[in-house]
Image 1 (cartoon, rainbow, N blue to C red):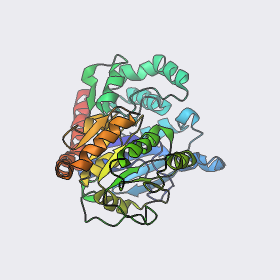
Image 2 (image 1 turned 30 degrees about the horizontal axis):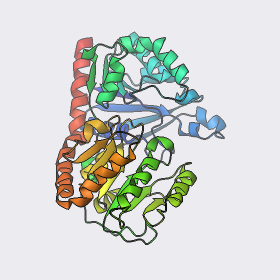
Image 3 (image 1 turned 180 degrees about the vertical axis):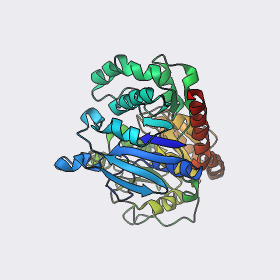
Length: 391
């Protein structure tokens, strides 16, 4: 079967295999192993560089792990929606049996749907967004209520990353029979519990037996200010606890000031240097708990990576996290911005190391079901069913 993915923003740099969207990468890799021919159509990475100019209009190709990636000429990306002048032709050139697009808000998804209708080929939307983006909310809402209705009415299937995303799709009067949930996966062999390491290089030499970790961009929607204030409540009972934040972003000065104002310079550390991907399992395996205090999160990849390495997760009740983190089994869920609830759940596991270890073992076992080799078979079944209906 020939499968074409339309996936904006696949890579950070062209032809370097530095993949931003590991979800498309992981799924395509496993679909190739199942015998499919996969092509990913994506935006020219130069679109993110305002000085790139004519480079954005170039077309490039590469083959990795058996699938083809085509970087399309990209005119621009107003409101985060890349514009591909040659998209129709590129879809036709792949001669697809099925096309899978990313997100209802993308204009390119609507274009691909219309092309599929002309070809009489099934079109699938892989949906993660579960509420209208607050940026340009009026325009996005208007889109959903006007031309976006075409997409909701005629897409052959919506594969949703979470129950929240499914509810968002169904709120637009979509047939429930065309809406299913298949979560995001990971390459399970790359994320296993390993021997812990000392973390002093990340905490400016501070030693601690119990380290809490968040890996996230330093931006408001990641809710790191809530976690920092929660840690302030935690250290009143556990003064030796350390909270490590790994990431960079424009909120760094604000978070640094918050740490200072609350006297947490010896307990909270922000590590802004890039951490190699192969070192991430060392981090996950060496910390006591993993925190995800986001106020909006489609599907946090670090969540399943940490769980796969046996690290319990405490996360806000948002997006895919409320599906994956089984409350009271291998982690806890709390209402976003509720710092006291987060602090209390942290204390529960700090007080009971046996429970923390039980959570870790349960998490490792549960994450076997999130391996891309398992999930790809579910996608494969959907594709085959849709193709049979079109024949």
